[in-house]
Length: 74
Image 1 (cartoon, rainbow, N blue to C red):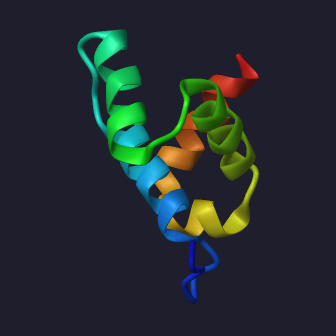
Image 2 (cartoon, rainbow, N blue to C red):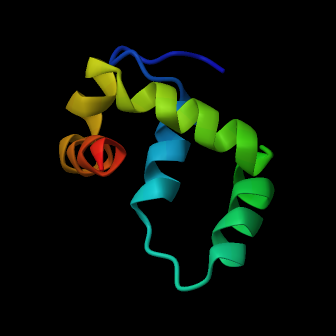
């Protein structure tokens, strides 16, 4: 996937967008991960965990990354 000038590629942005959505049922999110992104949930969460540490992701979605960093510390 091509990287944009903000340092994130389109898959990174799609992961952050999907993670910002609210899910009533866990299975619905896992289904969306597979259908929209073509990733397994394991690969999705591995990539999301790496994104949480990236400054460019924090600039792109500051509130989301801040929330995820706090949740990870619990």
